[in-house]
Image 1 (tube, rainbow, N blue to C red):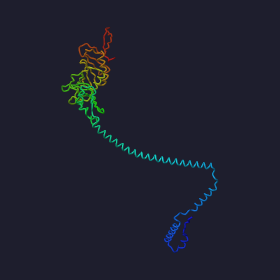
Image 2: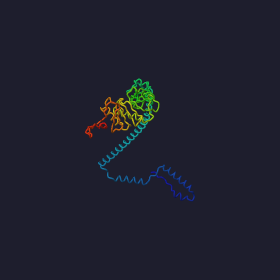
Image 3: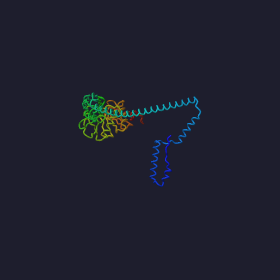
Image 4: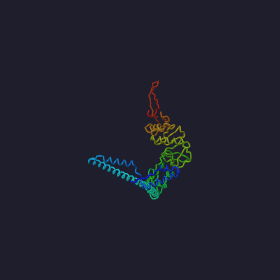
Length: 380
């Protein structure tokens, strides 16, 4: 057993205290320590307490009674189970580490795939955009729907479409308005793109609502206020009297009156006549909007007053004209300005019967019988 040599610092310090300074003493002690370590082979000294504990453990082990075979077997089994458990835990840790590494690799690979997919999608979008404005979506067919006075060829020609336009690059802005300027008997035009190769044009025919005379010409107005033609005298639409346009009238344009109230009057009267199902109204005089006069079949003059309760007034007129109250040859004047009572007056020398008329017989003071006619509202 190797024993380390420890210098006697106390003796050395005591014998040289007077003769050495502190620096020299420290240097001397350092040299002695290094020399002692070299002589001991640079091995650390073994502590006495650790030797003592080891001897006590060995002695205690010798004093213990020997283990029985069953106990040894159980201990061996426990150790074996512990070893297996440690092995399983080690395998599980390895498997978890392997899964973690695979997940990290997959995440890195997936991240790179996303970049690849994005680049591929951008490239595909660019290629599709180029093809869509060059090769794809070129017009192959133009179809026309709706009833009109024009042929399909005339409508397509008015549109300016050649049939070889690319639907993606084709702009339809302002095109319906240009067509309406050229096709004056249409009220509306709608153009749609039907991908991949079709254009659909839908048209609506203008329906005459009224006509009026201006500067010697008889203009026809549609239901949307558009001037259809100058052939009003050859149509069956009602003639509006007292209408004054705000500006010069151009066929195909929309008309406006100097008094905006007149436009509303014409539309309201036309709507009420159409709703009541009255046909044969010849003229409508709106010179005075509080005393509007209509003529029917050039023999019945109808005073309706204002447009207040216009629907009720038209129902009364329909009842009087078409339910036997007025003969087909009678020339009369009707006043329905008051919807509570309708008044009929003759305007010719022909015998007329007021409608409805109730005759009551009553005796006079001298015993003679007299007849009294009383006018009532229709249906009374």
